[in-house]
Image (cartoon, rainbow, N blue to C red; front, top):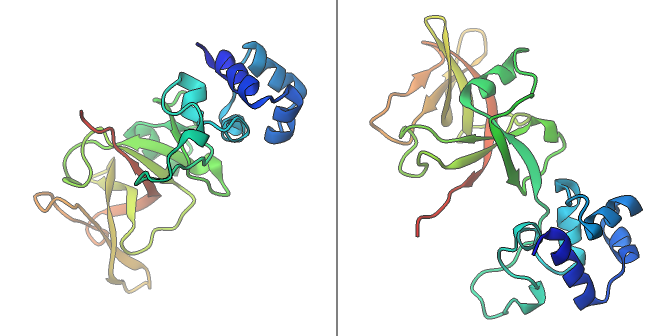
Length: 224
């Protein structure tokens, strides 16, 4: 069963028409017609509203996974269902993320795509990275996915993606942001602190540091 067939199944079960989906999602008539007939799939912009209208989940509509009907969700469960819309964001490598501070990366050809429920006023500033190395272990493991907002200002205690420059070589890193004082020019002296004590702390008095973005979400695939 493909996405169009699942949409048609839920429409039949709920006795909905295409007009109902147009009202429920705000999508155009041609767009909804394409969903129903299978000529196009729901985009990230509409998948959340469509799943709400069909009383199902985005995951079930897109790939058949999970619950078909949210009405079947049992109240005695120890978890609650969220129907927050999913939004597509670029998955970058660390070189591309580092170039966000410059004019060198234009957003074309990201490493891949990812999905998030995180929303802000500047969606073009949100991207995803995968954790590399063990400097933030055990809380963050290699392969874990981070959602980063480049429009946010780091605060003490924030987890950040930053660029460090040592001996003319730039490197992008994931660390905890800490302010330890103010220099003679009134500029904050910051440290980038690893959660793993076996790795060194970076200090802005010793190397050049610039903040690329603040980590706002952490996704991990669990082993089974």
